[in-house]
Image 1 (cartoon, helix red, strand yellow):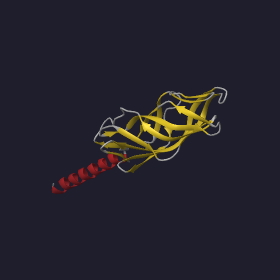
Image 2 (image 1 turned 135 degrees about the horizontal axis):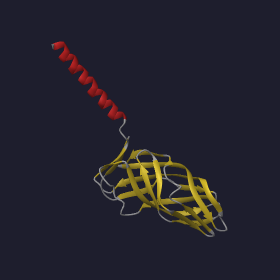
Image 3 (image 1 turned 30 degrees about the vertical axis):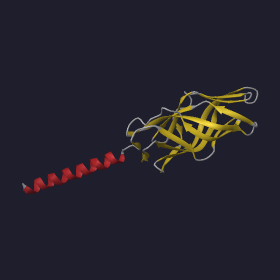
Image 4 (image 1 turned 90 degrees about the vertical axis):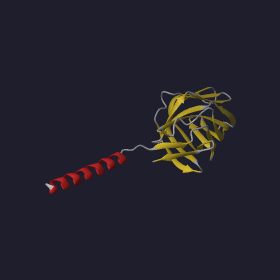
Length: 192
């Protein structure tokens, strides 16, 4: 009888350890914030959008208030980003970019959440919402109390109108740039 009880306890322990291993293996990456609060962003390098009209380069970024972290632990974050000091070198003109709203998941996918427009003389580039869901690939690195978002996104759909950039729906656009995001007065981390 003692042997059967010991065997039962041993099997229970094995099943418990197996359940812990399975739940750990299926755990999703998360963003962690403490405390929740206003998000801030800085550009670590030149931000580059490539379209059939040429590459749009922007020197600085800022998050658009009131973007706050939704909870202490979350799978995705909705951020509005304003790109500043932009130009299109191939056309030799300055460009203005209406704010982009991105839904960024902790798995490294990005979706454009509101239509975005890039304006330059004789050129309007529209980046529609429906065609730009689940874009890959973002990677994350914890850095200076925040998350460094490293973007090399491909397959961005855009439409160009105007004398300088008239093209139909194109799905070959790219975005490359690094943005450091953190919580004002707190810490933001990516937990793989």
